[in-house]
Length: 390
Image (cartoon, rainbow, N blue to C red; front, side):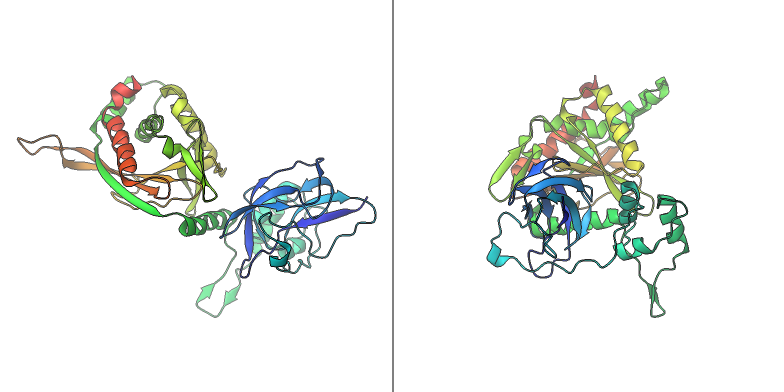
């Protein structure tokens, strides 16, 4: 039976690429014509994409979170006899009418390699290589392997334009982050508030645990993250997100994101699922495992992460205005610890260890008082961290 390609549709002028958000069918599943088969995100919206054929899905050619060019192949489908692939055919967004659909982008002229395993293709795309470049890379053996990609990249000089600069493809992780940030700047109505938090309780508890020895040595940041997770129990709006323009989705548990920096100024997200349900030791173990995964290059970002933490203590930064990336609704910044004025002393001025917290929230869902109540709950948990953990 003939096999046809499904391609990323062109849905408006100026669009050059889209992110594969979710797949709605698995290889081997029967698909009806005009049935939603995957979701894609552009800088305008997240939408379902329908199948232009009836048949059986045979394979996905891209992983979720991959950024694909308009007209790029996303899947293969086996269809009935007598059905031929329409040049440039693709699924159409469910919310779009046939009259408003634009013509697809021209198909890549590069032949698809048959000697490249899926993991090598994913690795090549992560490195920002085009289909034309991939087709030209020599294989050392019978299959094109990631080592061949590395050898090609190490021997490839960055294209020179003029004499004062070079150009090279943007890394896949940064392209993905850029796509999310552009989406956020168009959707989110941000508000930012900050508070000074006494940090002495955290440092004292960290010192006691360290002096006691043993294998369990949670960091000060882990204690801070636990204080945030416990606060999320009582603030369902920070466990929520907007679906479209009029539907509020509230998760039963909190999926907490932690920004993790990688060498080369790359940024990925570690995620602690059900963070508000975990007891202290389980939480500390889970967050360490997820951060280790992120440091190995595994980006765990997904649609259920509603709030993320960014820790800049090691960078010596005291204040910042964090950015919210939808579908998340808030990002909480932790600054460096420093000596500040004890806020509870009225008779005399005393110094104490402090840290600044800055919360940026999506004003479409959360208003100022609700955000302030949440931030003050985090502050109270941090300042009483010993009793919270005990």
